[in-house]
Image 1: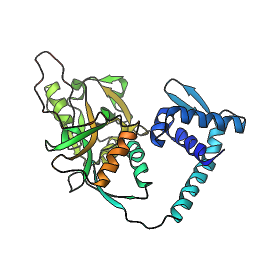
Image 2: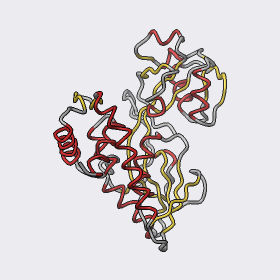
Image 3: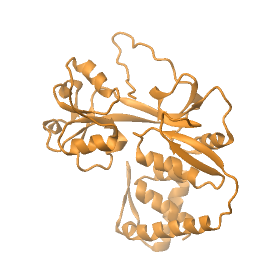
Length: 298
């Protein structure tokens, strides 16, 4: 076995998916599959149980993971120890605070590993070379490189009566205590239900909103990625379509810096974001009568 195979193994273990592991490591899925097969042959045991939606680590994988993670981290630390200080491109990147943490980690790791690039992370409204934000927040004077689409779901206290329903309608949330996240989802729901909302609290961050949900204060509408690993709240789909598209926004009025070109090239090379090319955000148009319109909350 070699460090590359252990790195791929660790990615599969953490992502629970060959596809996501390949995107995280910026390689093809067959390369990941071959590395896992080589490890299983060398160790003489199966590491993962494959199924339609991904993989499940077996006992051998659980035992191997801490060893593999330590070897990979120490190899990276040794490599960094002998890097010579050379001039680095500085990239100031604005990040929306409500982004899926796993996606952000997978997106930024290849950049922080580069010897010629130094990241400076700022808020989404601060001066920056580029921003990773929802499409609805991109300006008319910005290019927008689509990265991923994410739906919104309802997060409820574990003992909330609405947990008895497999899916929720907008009308179900009328007269329910809500945690407002300072975004536009609730106004959309209120418009569909025709009834006023009952705001129990206002939260500026997803973590704070979910903490209030877990405490039983109310229900919150949040991006699906924020509740993927939460065990202290219940999650239900919403029948009306609530989605947001996340991507890289950067000024269209000036040529990209070398650091920004590096970022764009890295994103285009990744299988995870599936970019469709840099485009300006389309102007919003009214939905045709009788047709259901997708809503992209901010």
